[in-house]
Length: 82
Image (cartoon, rainbow, N blue to C red; front, side):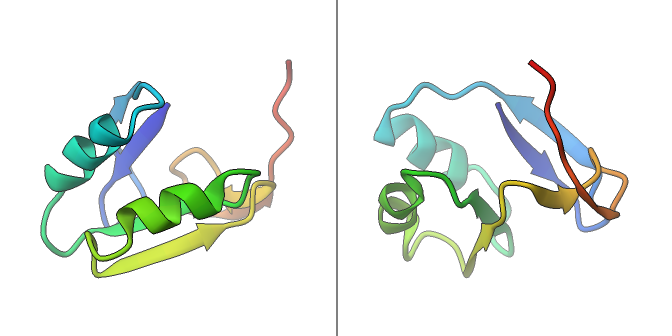
């Protein structure tokens, strides 16, 4: 699942993207001009970084175990349950 958040960290849209480069490009192209993109540092982050490089003013790498608490805007350790 991929989320679009506003500048206050509130989720404004959640979409499920196929693992297809063109789908990701279409999603990113719809974002507002001043958007920032966060890519979780997982095993294939570099592929997505290179794919999106130049499409957004800012691309950030996000630690997979830290981040906003489900849109609450607070950093916390995240432990997903299976």
